[in-house]
Amino acid sequence: MRIAMIGTGYVGLVSGACFSEFGHSVTCVDLNAAVIERLKAGDIPIFEPGLEDLVARNAKAGRLTFTTDLAAGVKDADAVFIAVGTPSRRGDGHADLSYVYAAARQIAEAAPDTCVIVNKSTVPVGTATEVERIAREVAPGKAISVASNPEFLREGSAIEDFMRPDRVVCGVADDQARDVLKAIYRPLSLREVPILFADRPTAEVIKYAANAFLAVKISFINEIADLCEKVGADVQDVAKGIGLDKRIGSKFLHPGPGYGGSCFPKDTLALLKTAEDNAVQLQIVAATVKVNDERKRAMADRIIAACGGSVDGKTIGILGLTFKPNTDDMRDAPSLVIVPALQAAGAKVKAFDPEGMKAAAPLLPGVEMCGDAYVAIEGAHAAVLLTEWNEFRALDLERVRDGLKAPVFVDLRNVYPVDDVLRTGLLYASVGR
Image (cartoon, rainbow, N blue to C red; front, side, top):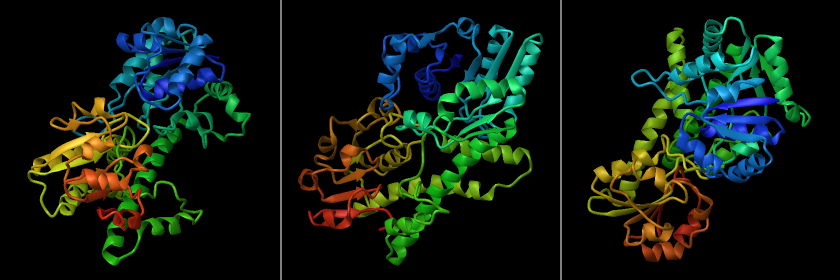
């Protein structure tokens, strides 16, 4: 199959590279000439484990190409995927669909007479219908079908998620779209991956409902962690105990400083706006958003409390800035709330993140970016483990203690057993234990 991918951001680049690995011919299109030149040179603009090798292998084989020329990229395509950004719109939290609709218009103008436009971007219900209206308005003589194919990629394990997904969701309105998507995903059907075909509104709701449910689990276990601290329970054992129930499952039951990233924050807000527009109350999702916002602010207070109630004039060493490990993504990272709150309380902040410091530096002015974890905590009054990168899972705790000016270790991801930390003489603060 001949595929065009409009947008070379996180979703577009990963999806395009993986489709080419399936054996399809893929052209990735982006209007940003600098990004395209980097990709042609083999320089990947995002950090995702395994992506550089995947792109290089398929580019060398001629299955994966990059261009700024949208018309040339889509002129022979069987399917054109829209994978542009849908950021939260200022003021109301709704997804900004201007990039999607602009892409739809340009695609319809340049597409062959028979083609399928596929929304890969995360979009509210009804977007596929509007894209179809645009296509019919722009190119009334073409047989253009429109489908919805939401992505379910976790940053840090996106290639594995694409190649071995739990399911593939395809929203279609006609046989043309169904047949093209079946052909594109045939390599997965041979592995017996469930491929769910539904109508387009259903597919669009599935994406938002899935992300909202996972966000609910995160906020739920964070609230349970607060209860555990008050009653003397251990939230990790509580999470294990309820996670062993197959009706619940263990995933996303890890207490911490709150969720961030490119999906959960904006998708929960967009879902709430869609519900509001349709006079439906989603009280659980609304509470989840509120709990998560409060959680990030509360973590700054927890650090201050661990430092004796004040960080004025003190130095805090932060380990990890990105919203999760194995990514350089800083979007809605808890650090963007926690660090400024510490600075506002008078603290000097030093930090180290294996991949995120370049992206973090302009977002966190005044933070001293350091070369490694031990430099970040040297001379600090507290070390704070904020993102659970693998290299932070085996710190030399005695070296941590000796490097600190005051022996305070705040583990916001519960990486270390309590007894192991206390045995070194460090004062330990964790979450829900």
